[in-house]
Image (tube, rainbow, N blue to C red):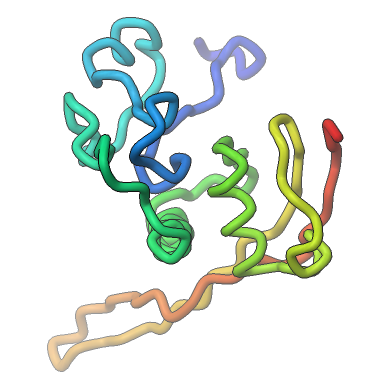
Length: 157
């Protein structure tokens, strides 16, 4: 609709922003076709397969794996989203790992846990480098991403 108040916000599902996976059946996501049928307004990232290819019944993802995934997500976000204000919705372990990596002070350096319905706010800062080749073609390379101004807005505990 042309009236901005009638537009839905853009909702994009990215596999990198999901809970730690494996072993526990509640951490296994649904089929792509089921998600599309139930939530047709949601955009699924191109790597979102029909079956949950990452979940395994006999192996739990390590916290180190979640850290790598959370950092990769921020790099992806900086490279793919032009919006100035976004919301990231995920699960406790993923959000906790992200905050402990980029702004541990908001979690009292690991003394505080993230619970369902906790709300945090941060600024995502990306640093880019401009490169121009010998023909004059301009290219931008992402050098780093960080979170600043992290704070708790609401908590369920």
